[in-house]
Length: 228
Image 1: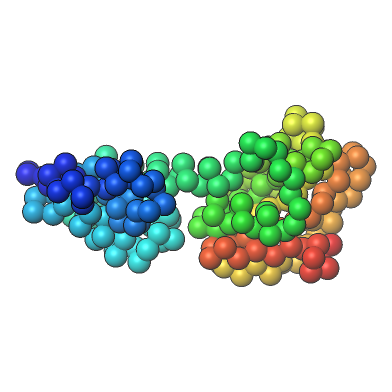
Image 2 (image 1 turned 90 degrees about the vertical axis):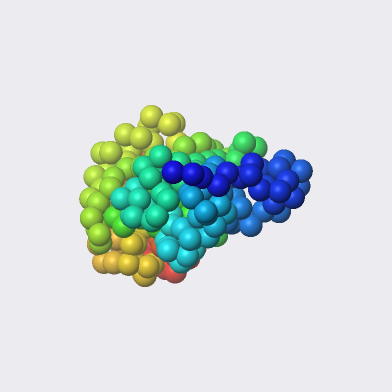
């Protein structure tokens, strides 16, 4: 099958060349996706294919939840292109969740929401994580403690505090997602948090907060809202 490559486009329309000249922030989302795709299909450039992919998933948020199988249903997308797209999206999430190189401290629940909503908000199962902090309140590790079901995660204090000891954490911020999109804590969320706080008090490892995140960059601090 003949393909339309980015290199076949006029130089002014080549996303790779534009990125090298003006930087990635100047490119549109379809242009960035076209660079990942590299080539289009017969009679269809990589940029056109990128636009069709984005239209199929109604933007980046749903594309971030796509599977290889769903992507491969789009004409011109095979397994290789699908895994390239998902790998790039996952790299973006990991960059967003990585502690800053300067070791900046977490100063508010908004810091946690800004960092963890892009990582957990799109997931269709509850993921329970712990941000491990040093004595200065800087994130030293982001540990996934458990992966649960559509509406619950099973967390045992043993797993949580084993990781806390392993990272020599002085304190922790608990984080989990609600796939439903509603960040209101459940009764089980509240009971679990209270139990983990008591365990932390016994071990001398403070639980600073428990933040619930959801898609659309929504988050709720259980401490700020008086649940703990």
